[in-house]
Length: 277
Length: 322
Image 1 (cartoon, each protein chain N blue to C red):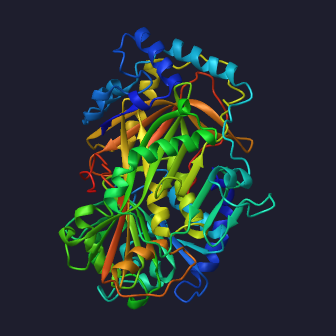
Image 2: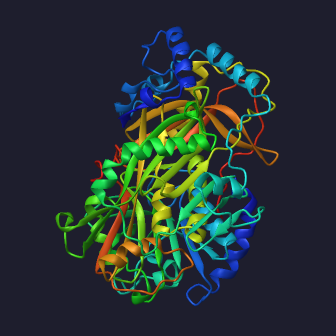
Image 3: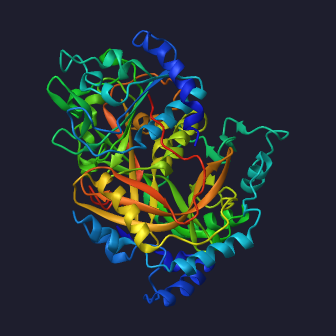
């Protein structure tokens, strides 16, 4: 409901922020969303996905973060790939040049852990894979929080593949086990993520608390199963970093340990079995 | 997809509605005619017309129309039972010391943050758990039943009586820790909290966008609260409760299902809901059919079809994020 009100405000910020992406020192956030796959990559149309991403970004902007976004035909793989892994990767001047990033796109589990659909082919690729990413200060960027509004983005059996991108120093990576859904009723949850993660609780906790959702059909129901992973140099740090808020700026540590936060036994019904205890 | 536990947790008003509707539609008494039959939840196909046909709830348009008219008559000025209107109400509910002299919409202390969001009216509370040890997992599991009862009692104190709860589920928020290169067999398991998640109904009709979440680490130790339970007012211009026919609903649904499915094998689910829309800057509700297009391999889509034949004006469209 707040989307219309904030559209013009966000556009103004974006023009300013894009000019300084990569060198900006102000706290900033990135979002990318696709609704129609009308480039040369494929996917089913989902009209509300950009509204979901936008709700998060606008709320972050309201709370003082400079918003940067690259949507639709601008969603191409080089913007998320680290140059240490592929010479054409530009993440350090794009998503990894911000403090927090959110990508809203179709996803599926694959051998690398997750494959996110791009809009338009770049370097011959329509998919962004886990093993192409390294996020955070140690890899030339500064991202501390990476969230994916994308199916199977933190699929339980493959979640430890996110240790690879976390070697870049990113503190928290969050996504979904199994399938998730798109629609107007989810928009507020993204706004709440931004509000809670800024003012009242850690981002890793705000993700799971706000993205968990039951779609009820009276005679049956479906559950959405978010998972957040904290990374750190010790077991205690990997758990405690789930309490880090967007603006807290905790110091970086090596990603030697991870703590996953999730709902015990959560069963997405489609796209993955029930989570363990 | 699970069969719902609504039989034991459905509010009494919902049960009354169920009992009224089911015999009229010739359905089994344990099937709610406001939603897709349970067996349709397992049907995946590319035959979208068949899916829509199977998923359409079996309600009678005439009976449901009368029921909606009753809701309007019962709550002419809306129904707004939540008692958490200001910061001091949250403090009283949770036994917190008064931290403000009133008026503020957000309080932050070293121990907790709480408030009432200006735009949405969402009530929220989060205790600061930084540096604190988690719960023992087995203890969290053991305490679920007791904490669920306490959570529902607390919600009742906040104005959310049990007959307003369509569905409630209590579970454990897990924390699993492991070193790089080590599998789950070498991980350690703890619990962040025990939580209860609740959805809303009014007189048996599901209210979209209303939910309550409450989490604790023990009896009386609330660590999180998020309540979206706004006042519900049917669209004020809704003057006729004549609803679209089953054929009209199927026709509208099929066009959207075809677009959303994009040729894939999908499941389709439907439910009668009261859905929030914006009218002149305020939230009002439109009786709607919620439709879920649920693929096996990519993100599904939810959309709504207005149930009344009467055309209603409101703002609700998706916005291109250019």
